[in-house]
Length: 131
Image (cartoon, rainbow, N blue to C red; front, side):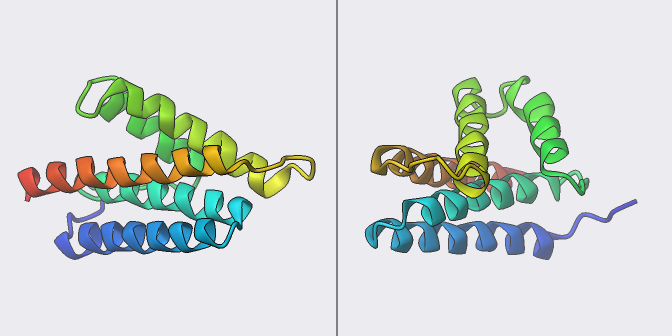
């Protein structure tokens, strides 16, 4: 059984903020594929910060996302619209990383970054209320 660790929660949230900063730098340099990847990882680490409060963790991304959707989106702890945006972010990240024919558009990358920013804000408030 995992032990709740304030340090782990805050480490994951800080990791998410760092990934977001990297995504913005890459976006500004027109490196949209890489920016999509970093924005998604910002989202992923933000979600893992929430899971560290339970504490629970998973080895696979799909399991992290499924648990978050089931326990935090479907219960409306976080807005349902955010769940859809996270799903889309994962799809864009996979396309950016694995689809040789995927062409990253600045608008999609902007949306990735906006999702990461909003989720960090929501999760920061949630964590503050729980710790």
